[in-house]
Image 1 (cartoon, rainbow, N blue to C red):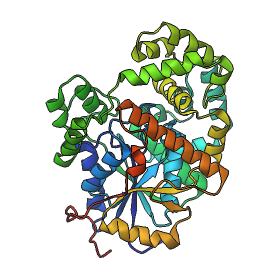
Image 2: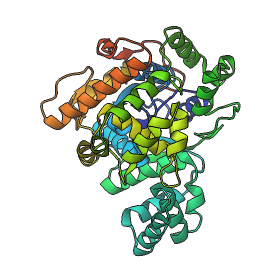
Image 3: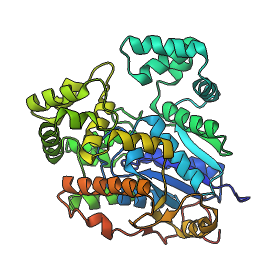
Image 4: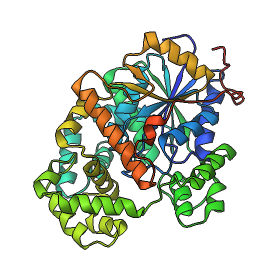
Length: 415
């Protein structure tokens, strides 16, 4: 570690909107002249959807917003439930050997975060009993856990209704359970909530994507900083924006489900309790992806989980490798982009990094890393198919570099 704090942020920037810019600016105000390292979701995101823009375009936006180094969160972790997503991202930040602090947004920054984290790590008998009770009543794991926490410690349930609070808790659990010396800093979120589709002065990424898909593009662009607007408009002209309801996505998924046996589907990551039967039944009847999801969703299986199951199935992400990935975590640090300051950090990481650092698709030596890379390559190719692009286009992508003067408050290039 170094004397100067180095701040880590985990993000999707799907796309990067004014709320994200506020978070970065607030972090820089708290830590002036300190480098920022962003771990960015790959081409499939946590809610189980193809990213709106590819990861290189989103990395470019992150750099223009003031990040110094943008690292890749591989698809097996970026397209997963909150704790898997958060744990892998924290592991990558720690793997740099440089990051001292982690900054994240929350609806309600408070000491309840530490309290909830302690309960979930220690799992006292009262909590276990309550969790089992709610699971037996058919609630999803996340909802059952929230209700159990509220019974053990009244007030925690309401606190965890916020999606950003929930992710913050997942980060905190990973840091606490591993005993990492990373200090956390919570920034109060402003504007619309993560899943809200209504448009505010500072909208959610969901609202921006929804407006774009509804052909209200000017309205959507109002929620983005100028540099993010320019990137989105450029990618739109190139035909490189993936909208919800992409017809190719449903065609590929439906073919995969109907052409696979029940046994083959049952081996896919996170598949459980006869879901393969429901998938085949409703894929045969549904006329669209949204109709299919409406048929599949239940109290136990929320939409985001069904969407992730579909991604895993299309990517050939099986049960055994999923377990291995959760146990072993990321096995490399992939670089998506850097500023001059980020380039300096990268040079330091040659000595400090706890994981191998790569800037291009290479051939790892161990079998686990090779399989992880194969899934990432499939994810990139699948995303390219959705925009009718060259399926090997990602191989030509190089690390994005910015050489403009950094925004006010960012670290100097001599760092």
